[in-house]
Image (tube, rainbow over all chains, first blue to last red):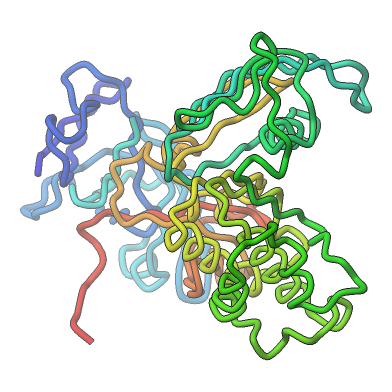
Length: 117
Length: 290
């Protein structure tokens, strides 16, 4: 198992835990380019900047569009790593008072990040 | 090991094409030839089985030379240990199932093989039936059994399942794997179905304009190894359904239908019948004894 630190083109750092090691997967080498994938449903959103929480990947973003559904809502966020989509419950959208142009932090646990060499 | 080194000028619909091919297949491997129609796949297999004469080159199988333009060797099809299964079954319509198999017997060959194959292919009860009374899947089982009568070392499957419906295809895929293992064959498949190729073959050769342009293990070939995700399957899209702000995609994987949630952006790129990769991290699935 390895924890891999990925520096994005924009300078942000993301972390991923993978079962592979540099021995089992030769692409795990400092300086190698990888793509980073995560599922829209695994993105959490917070309006607080500093959180005492065990979610390692945090990126600042701004909501550019919200599509509110009956149960779930789809947030399109502008961040320094590019456009990120978050699928969260409509309940949370209401509770947190999320609207377009709200500044938020997006949060993704390190076990949710897939690396694609 | 099979070593092909072949040159042949072919007349195709699009004009002349020069097939110039070097190909090595390990004994006991299950390989797929992949590529557009007219790339030279069927011609290659016809040359291997002796149905088409190369202009020049060599065909070596193990220690034996089947064809050599320089040494003037050209074994007849019946001298080559090749079983050939076609998409259209090519059964004799006037013979019943048993007679179709018996027709393939060589002089003085032990007839016990017929009983063995009828049993193995579950054709015992159908042995007196004429091909026209059989379903597509049954016909293809007969064609496959007939290809095995002469105990070939090499089995050639030229799009054998493409005329069958999905359920029958999946059943016969299992059967092909069983045949490949039981008779210790070197099997060469022509197929366009990615899920089928990944399921059946050890390695894949892509042909383009009569030459091999790419080769690799089946999963590497289609890029399925190119993520760190370990919980990974390929399948076919059965249904795309909008639910609330997202889509639910039903995917057939083996005999199971699974459902995956997808963002509209990605769902838009999919259509029913598409071959897809479904992947998640090894950290996510739960596992429980049943």
